[in-house]
Image (cartoon, rainbow, N blue to C red; front, side, top):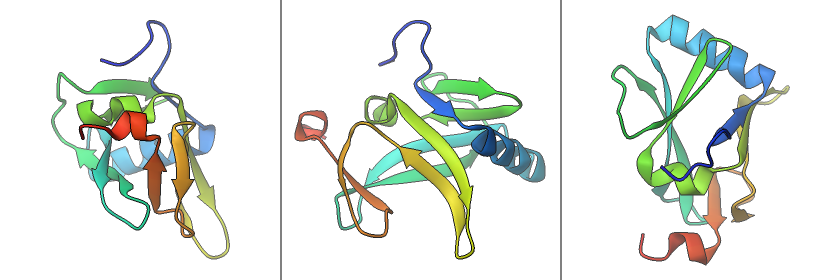
Length: 121
């Protein structure tokens, strides 16, 4: 929808690919849908949900057995994002390296986009 022909909307690191494929197998889902919603102290939050049915309007990224679907309203916010999966002593989870983010809260759960992307939303 907002993509550039021949370029994936998001890229997945090997760690993210492995974790997504593992989650798909465990849950029996067709992938993970990534979206954006209003919330958090910086204004917006990422969402991730298991998918049982594919939506024709989703942008689909497939890599090494992992499938990520990007919800239509999130596509312009996520274009160019690298998704990683990190494990540390205190936490583990998906990390979004998004060039469209201009600010984030201290915990990293909430983000803010350039106002030109969010006007009218």
